[in-house]
Image 1 (cartoon, rainbow, N blue to C red):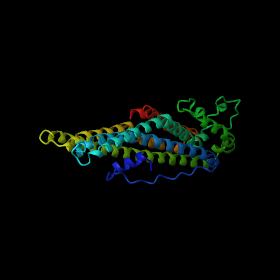
Image 2 (image 1 turned 45 degrees about the vertical axis):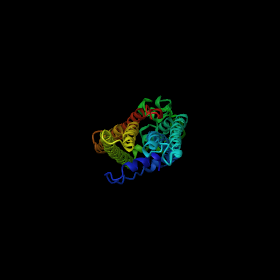
Image 3 (image 1 turned 90 degrees about the vertical axis):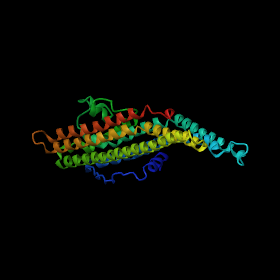
Amino acid sequence: MALHQGIQRLLLIGAHLDPRVRAPTSQPPAALLPLVEAVAGEHQRFDERALHFGNRYRSGFWAIYLLSALAVLCAVMPLALGWDSPRHLLHPYAGLWAIGEVLLISTVIGIYWRGHRRDWQGQWLRARTTAELTWYLPMLAPLLDFAAPQSESASAAVPNWYIRVFKSGQHLQETDEVTRLCARCQPLACEQLATVWQDPGFVSSYAQWAIDILEQQQHYHHAIATRQHALLHRVHRINTWLFGLTALGALLHLAVHSLWLSLITTFFPALGASLHGALAQSEAYRLAATSERLVVQLQSAVARICAALGEASTPIDIALKAAIRSAIALIMEEHQDWQMLVKPHHLPLA
């Protein structure tokens, strides 16, 4: 478990989260199985890379915020304990708190330096984009006309399948790996998919597979929205208590002169600000809102695929291709929006 996941799990102790619903399993059509297997290794490699750097980046800024609050605590603890007084028995050890403060600040600097130098955020975003594009390649492949000779189709000469389907590179960023994978899988796709649309069994199984994948995405984004809303609510409640106790401590300080009250009025605001800063940098509210919207849009995409299968006036292959193309475009656009949401939040903000 990554640090940021452990912190969030701790914050959500006792929170009511919807029970996990098992997402539908997806079984690709037999004609697509070789292509799925061909891209599985690359997808796994980039997915693991994205998880690695994503965990480092998110754990990094959570650690920076919370360690900064602990550094404030170390700064005021000698005063609260009375160790700063020369008459106190433990006065010779008061410097240990200063050493702790320096160590915490040094750790913060080290996290920032390492994360910025190794570009944790940039590597996370690039790997996640490549993993996403690789994952949807087998679903995208049947939308291409592999039977058309390259001399008769200008788009057929373009190696990247996303550009060929969407006639644009708007969904693509740093995707040389995807282009190379498309070129490598081109002969296999030509062999497997040249005549699949003439097979009614393939059409129905392809549509069902696409529906299952979209429903998996619905479950995933529903879980994200639920968790982010719960996290926002819990941190808001904690901050309400922290700043309420700070105000109470400040009022009591007018009548009772206690160094422990100084500790409360110093550390509690620092901790509250750290929690708020980490939550703001994670864009919890906008992630929750985006995921909620995407759940609804994915449901509409599933409905369009089902409607395409039931249309009698329009050739099924044309309607189904349009519906699945629209669903993949929706997912890619939301991924691009997520990139634009996360990219401005570098470790220096923490």
